[in-house]
Length: 207
Image (cartoon, rainbow, N blue to C red; front, side):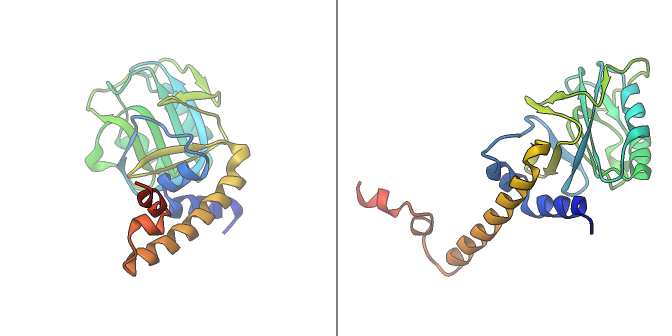
């Protein structure tokens, strides 16, 4: 397992909520939820497309590296199914870990896994293939800026972005948080109240 695989495994095991906490409660992509597939993590490949036009997604797939996460900024605001069965077949062949789309996805009953797909909506409305706004340039998804090379983690809780320069520190912080929470979990299983385990009993004693 190379370092990229280890990073992905660490982030997936920790989960979006823990990663979000580990980097100071930053990086959440609002309004995007997992539609298909399991938890995923990988470096971002960014593309921006006009409303109702998915040409840029096809262009991005030609440049995608195995294990990456295609992050699609769309002007469609959830109105268009910019990704469907055929694109997901191509993404599977390219070895993508996931797609994060601030627009819609369709053909959800026939999507190949991997990659996992997180999107704003599910809609059958189709697209044309005429223009691409940008490829590899920074994009904003759900209020969060994403650049190619940043890391993206997704699961049933949502999607979180880790800037490339923070990855090593967030991996370490997430691992520490997982160990800490396991200790808390063991104490709760032993019957200790949350007020004492979390250190908030002192607040209660002064009320």
